[in-house]
Length: 141
Image (cartoon, rainbow, N blue to C red; front, side, top):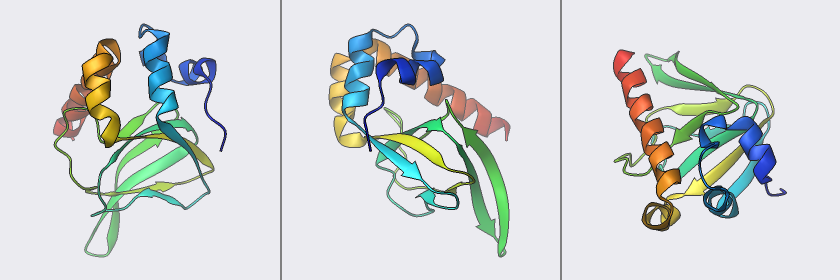
């Protein structure tokens, strides 16, 4: 699938507006662009959590299964980030992430995190703030 352009990315992810463009380009250059058809899984419970996922377009439901019943945890759409983030201790997915419509996602593998942290301060700062916001949201839940 074609690479996402910098203007396209910034039109979806406003939280990166103040990050230097070369840092965002690093993120784009090291991310894989995926298309998920309706009902396809981005991640499944128990699978290795090796990627940070940035939703460009579409919609995902995140849910757990308890007593054979689906319990929705979150709904994610364009501009949401899910999965592993820098400094996260996440090792495996604790829920299912399934597309409810055609969805486009950029996936950034953990093998690039050291370089990201070492050389792209502003980008790392935004992602750490995102992780802190996520922690607050899940604690509230």
